[in-house]
Length: 496
Ligand SMILES: NC(=O)c1ccc[n+]([C@@H]2O[C@H](COP(=O)([O-])OP(=O)(O)OC[C@H]3O[C@@H](n4cnc5c(N)ncnc54)[C@H](O)[C@@H]3O)[C@@H](O)[C@H]2O)c1
Ligand SMILES: N[C@@H](CC=O)C(=O)O
Image (cartoon, rainbow, N blue to C red; front, top):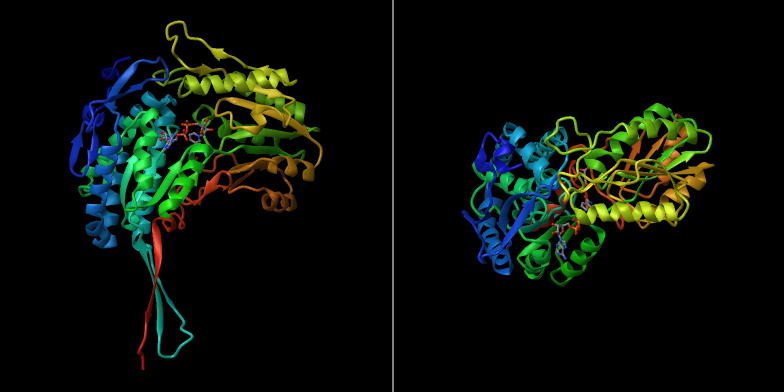
């Protein structure tokens, strides 16, 4: 499939340059990063493989733009963000195609992600005008105490490949709403969606230097981000991705004491109690697990089913999973696309092999799918494993693929202890009909997000984020601006 068959109504949305200040640029070094289609390995486009000099130029531009942007009335910043939302929504189809092409998710999901991304832009357009300070009752009759919220400064945004539009939008939008300026590095697998979004931001009226974006290969990503980590003008790092990289960023930010928000890996438990509505639990698991082919940080990774309902649940689940249609985004009937790359599919294969070698049984799937016409394609068949145990890799690490590993349990305290026996704490899910159990279990689970009789949790109005080694900071919601602001205390004396 060539770029032509993307059939974008606006071909110029396939932007292949970086934006620094007001210039779309090919990068200061003549190196290129190839963007490929995970459904066939074909070349989609080349973008700059930027380095340290581009990274520094981006910060120079963001710093130069900061004072004017922070000084603009909040209402004006909100208006720009509102226009950005409108142009994103107006280009839903083009952006959805771009996402599906470079990331592999089915087209309906690609289009859905565009609206999900826009919902954060619209939300933060609204929040921009509500960043109130406080007048605090003073303990002294001659002094008045106030607090105001200020933007932190230049923000470095580093994003993953699994939601190429939504992750960058839900970081840049609050940064801009707060009055910050941005330097951004999208994931090496999916830079085109990010570049298109930035192009639309420019068209919406974001001033020069307020958003700067550089693309880099996996090998050179650290070279770009290290410049930002070392630069004391960068006051905040906002990252979504793996826990090892998140820890590295936290450590390296310490030398200049930047604010850091980290949305990292999870290992979400999904618990089905004996009193649950089994059909609803199967539906919830299908929605939560197979979104983006299982490549979502909140995807259930460990499924615990009460022994009394285990066999009935697994039978219904296996029927649904076995019927999923795997194929490229270009086929509108595909429900599961290719995995992002060869590295990802090899990790899934390793998890399945390891589970089987330790006694798990494959009920459905279990294998890589080879496409004779596309030997580079990274497909894995939707899989259900039973008899999973805590020592298996699929129980300890995020599989990040379409594999459901099921284990049995007997009682509530035992399953809550097993659910919490992980260093991670992003999302957890459970299904039950008992109101008392809902409170007990929701309070006992060690995580940032709980789905109670619900598998779809994402919403711009909700605080998204984790605890433990899943990171810190919250994205979206009325708390989503906090990480991009600092509080300044004003004390006025001499009041008679
Ligand atoms: N929380 C999430 O949404 C999320 C998203 C993607 C991946 N993951 C997890 O991470 C695993 C690996 O995926 P990945 O390789 O894409 O994630 P990653 O953490 O390696 O990459 C995420 C971002 O960090 C950048 N990066 C990588 N190394 C860096 C470094 N040393 N310094 C600065 N930036 C660096 C990448 O270029 C990318 O932009 C997945 O299997 C999954 O478990 C989680
Ligand atoms: N995109 C996810 C987060 C990470 O994968 C979501 O918003 O649900």
